[in-house]
Image (cartoon, rainbow, N blue to C red; front, side, top):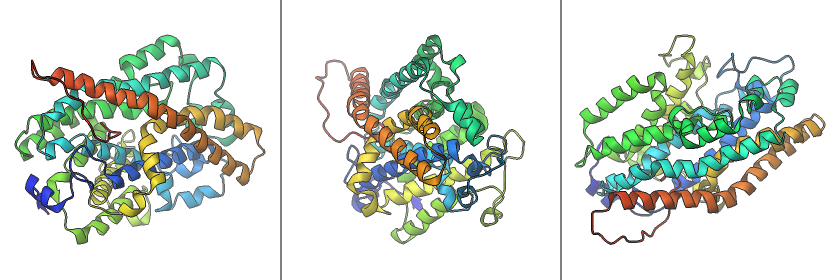
Length: 416
């Protein structure tokens, strides 16, 4: 492998996007977003109803129950663990974000990074804030049934969702304005922990690339990694994976190596502590309060490898299928909505139906269908408005004095 220059990427017709340059849709990466969207929903469904399957990831949070579901041991096997590996899905989303919002840099348009930088708060907050308010309304209306489900399934993690005592209007307004973005903490939707790294990580990486207007430089990148470690501690992994995604275009990968890179990425994404296929890997984090970070560490490697492979065309035909493109377009809205549906509609359905595998399967289908049915209009109205307002604000702030504003055409990237 070697560093690739802008001319290399233009001649190869890859790197920035399968359909051309920055500002165009990469069907494979958008389809990957769709797959990850479904994976995240399944992971949290398993968290609620088959918590024993997640025991290898965190025995303290998912202790073995007295009567585990028969699926649990099968889901604890490497490979099948992709269905339970929520960290891998999140890390891949982060790598995708890093890749997308630095596309203009590799296309020779570093000034466009300022537009993304100034609009980042609006882009994330416009879609996130109404979800917090909706969650508060659902709590006030008594629509959450997490405690009853947790008592039946033994899921400590699910029982901790949506604590009524903490879900006050004052806390909701605080979360909507700044608290989620700066701390990642929210009682209204614990999935919002990722928004902190999407926001702060994006700002740091955009500033890094603005400081390198003439190509990627080793010293600034290393300084960035050290700074991230100092600021976030072990949580820096969730920022460094975004940096890895941003650097994907700086590396030239031979076509024959792409399938191996993808399978290695999936192998690392399936990482399970203590399992034989991974016994050769060291565990850098040994402190009891940090041992969990070994999972996202190796998932980070897997996520960057998978994004690099898909960016170079791996699985393009499958990932470019229309259903996955649709799911990719809805992914951010579905991510924001899915825990609300799981803790209300799905929880009540679980309590109403007789216990059994068919009832659980029906619950899963209804849960995913409701999430997507809500995400479609939410994405088209609310999320699209956030993307548009963020771009317009960023363009207004960065436009030179006296320049006449122009409407920017092109396909919107969900991660912008």
